[in-house]
Image 1 (cartoon, one colour):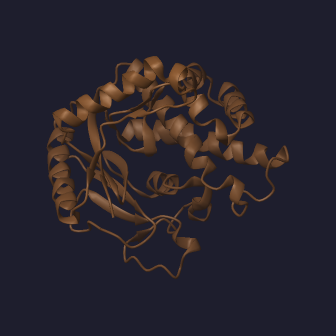
Image 2: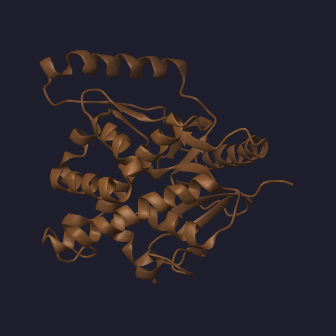
Length: 287
């Protein structure tokens, strides 16, 4: 029997919507807060949801909606301008990026202290039609690949920071929050404690909370990430760091950023446990 595959595409405003494909499921994130925005696609405000938390959870409200409302053999997430692709950066762009990365990796702290650059395989596109064509090529290709049963997860090629760890890169979010996450994971999800700390000290990040998981892994991912984020919210308020998480601008998008670190930790744990992963690149539509 053919496996069912759903890749949610998080939208929050008008743009390119691919809704004539069996794999992609466009979803309006934060819809409950923006009744004036009519995108004509599935909203994250139906069924069991956390649509109202979108200002702090970002694309994670789509992951949550899928967790509670979708049944499929594989479930994934991408963004309205950031999709998966089988394409690779050009040879010369790849060479330039690596030269720049290693220059800052070796000399950055001497010549330009604090300066860093990211090593990324993301492909930039300016044409909506070309972007859509490549997205549809990926959906057809990934369906065949996942139906083979060979892979447990599909993940984007990670970012690498030249001169910073993830803890240093995200330091603007507040060290106290990283410590709080560490405490929560230590107490509530100790099996992820070691890999979370390794992620914080690593320069490798699986960015944007993008991935495609098998059904079993998807359940494990959500069972890990969402209870940690929820408890972090509760303790942030209890400790007086923030009174109104949704409306205070200082806390905007915070849980989404923390989720990137948790997603990276989860993926790293799966790779350590010999789960079979397919690495693909991402493409970005410049508008």
